[in-house]
Length: 429
Ligand SMILES: Cc1cc2nc3c(=O)[nH]c(=O)nc-3n(C[C@H](O)[C@H](O)[C@H](O)COP(=O)(O)O)c2cc1C
Image (cartoon, rainbow, N blue to C red; front, side):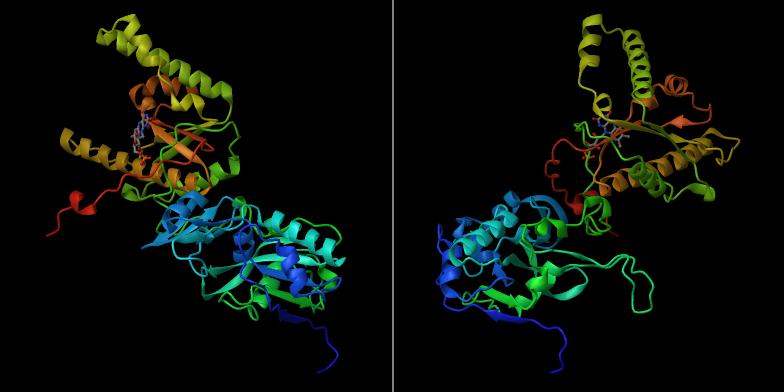
């Protein structure tokens, strides 16, 4: 061997089967008393979970339901989900291997916290400053086979940012951030056993990665939603759109709305036309003006229908999702490309063609908003008082408001969608 940089990875033998309540730091310190400053301990999350009482009796699917916050993709029985930690992985990391039949092992509640406690425990027992990684096995969407990744970390830099450093030709690197903690977890997996035997490894020779402070932990490896280009599996993106009627007060990113409108503009439309326009109501004044004027128009309609003032009051007092949305989009049909026929039948069909094209564009808009993590509610009200809506918003006379879309961050996850059997909706011939 030449004198280049190197490191070693060694499995730690002699650990007993870990039970709930076990002092993992004490077990590791006893099994590996030679731990030294700058060593990095890589510990399989399974034994951390067991020590923390996260091996529980129960059904795997129910456990996944409880651990997940968002379905990312589903294929047959396999579910890729986002966990409360923000991790995206199969089955929420719920594991039925290497645990008593009838029990499931859940990921640690706070894997970075687990790593910090383990680090402090080792320091207390052996007086050494080590880095700690809690690792779990994950698949990669475009690669066959699983590798271990860091779900928790303490006392090491989890990422090494090479951006701005020159490459071998002197050009600055633009995007490279090395996922050091994941690389270490994967290296350790080469020597740890997949069976219960050796769930801990020591990486030696990379003391430069170990820090005094516990540091940001493995949470730093979670890609922020705004940078996530693959938030849903392609087969799951349509199901991700649900009508949302309760929103948080968090503002809506105007750039996300622009991207969603760009998606709307890719809808099919007759005669190679682009018959869609969108009024985006960012200001509270514009929203209130529209909703107040529409309410007045609705009251006039109801009076005309013969309802009593009490009945009208009861109807119109009902919670209105558009009032609760932090942003409104009024999709408008601009059917200037519609052909004119001498008869009513064909004119009506022509209009319907453009209306369905509007529906396609709004569906694109809603799905794209869901991909941005935004909830939406498409309500019909502006269609019933087009003149009023146009006047309130100062829209041109040939923009036909086609409902209004309330947009915001969902206050709660949508309930499960009732299953629908395609066979009940189709005929095959
Ligand atoms: C043209 C149109 C008008 C709608 N109007 C309203 C409405 O006035 N109020 C409302 O709460 N939801 C409205 N909705 C939303 C439906 O109630 C919703 O799509 C339906 O309950 C199915 O739920 P999902 O969108 O989550 O699949 C409307 C939907 C469409 C397509």
